[in-house]
Image (cartoon, rainbow, N blue to C red; front, side, top):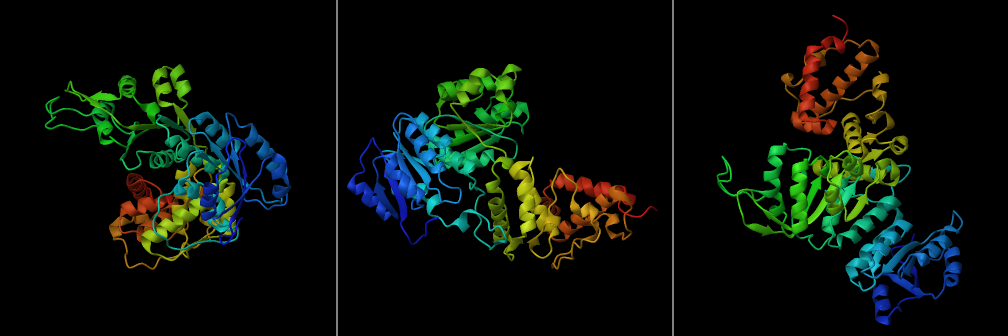
Length: 490
């Protein structure tokens, strides 16, 4: 990894275009030491000697040259430093761009793009120190930093996806994001929006599975005053609210069939007509849809229109489950803890090596959403700002706390104490629970009690526990109704 004080050692191989002196001077200003080579043989010696940080490859109508360069790099010994690959492609060759990213290019830049910001973004992953990209394997310590949005792409799979998404964002095409629940499809949609020409416009989102069917049409397309009983004023639908920006349709596979036909017409004509109006409204909106369903199967089952599928999926991006991009896990945990430190102004958190290994070994069926829940639960349980393996409560396994009666949760020293009515009657019982089921109930109660004592409201406690306020109320009610489940038999 290059030192920030040393220039980036780059080899430039482009048989299609010559590197102009003024462009080479601009690259030097960006911290690159560029050496132009003519053949693959010229690359071989410096790469094998470990003297190269980056190889810039110019591509024509295919990726044959990229494959050759990648084979040469892959042939290096496993303990040898391997350079990253940056490709330059004609702007019109979108297929070559996609193929280059799938082949393993770190970034793809248009051949006519010499903007400083573009090159800085492309070079940043190569220039940044190793410790900024990976969590220390022995001790991950987080200091309070300003709150930032959770966009972590450290794993090579994620970095390729990010670069491809940024490239696709520059094209005026509809994008369909596929991926499992909780994998971060909306985060990727925001990346596409923020990398596009409409980045300064609004980002408007709709979860197609979260609204009643009778409300969705009005929400999407709007209505005129007097269109129906109760329509006392004009209403701009989400399409109009997203004018000059992006409309994100999450869980598009749940859209009712009759609305699918109306959405298809809007996408085809790029106009809409409000309910109760005859005046068409021209649209300038980028459409991004997302789904966790197999829309091909839904088409076969007559649950989704095939013509709408092809209209939405001009370009498809697949975000893999978290278990396929383990390089993102620890950096995400660090980001979550840093955000918490920034919000609460508390001391830094640490993650023990054992806890780090446990996080990396888990399969994460709930993906990023489950990871955030596990981190929040661990912060509730850990009393000394050090997260250890016994603080990790995974959703699909028995919590170690349920089997270890000698774990001390600790009494938080807080100025706020919940009122007595906030706690179930069973919370004050001290009898030792009998049996595994009772032990589970007892520890669940202890964790809920700790969360309530560390929070100013039930809503905040529910957020720390990774559950909804409604679920928390339900659990408290059940614990009040069945005190024997958490205490000794009466």
